[in-house]
Length: 195
Image: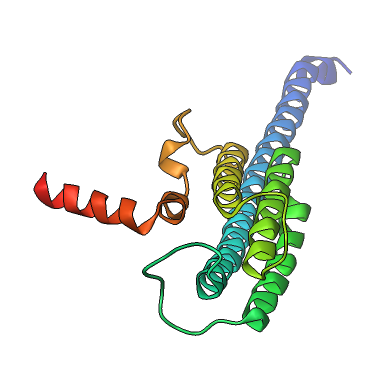
């Protein structure tokens, strides 16, 4: 018994070492698993956000081309190629499909800003299809550009991407082009040549 009591501190030390090793290893494995899961979900969110943005921009592009074709706004240049209402419906169906991933993976701010972006896009679509709307063409274009900026800001914040507080770099450059008259664009181009 005396021999056992002399070895008891060593046994307790070994037991404490085993428990401490187990706890440390478990905590490290759990931490590594959480990091891997976070990276995995970040990658999926990036894919969902970029796929959704691409789908919305496709809808907008077709709507703008349809609007130019129908004379909704004055334009002396637009991309070649025929587009029709069927193209717009196909693009809108793709946007709807991509929307589900944003709903699944996005935080509240991203979902809300994505919804604002596609609501603004609906206004463009209505005008492009010759339907009446609550906004003029220029107002709808401006609203779409602003909603796009809010979506990108929310998505970048959700993904932990650093960004400047100014939204100017993310503004839709096409909104400036589409709200200018051809004369404004010609004056700007002539001014660029002089400068």
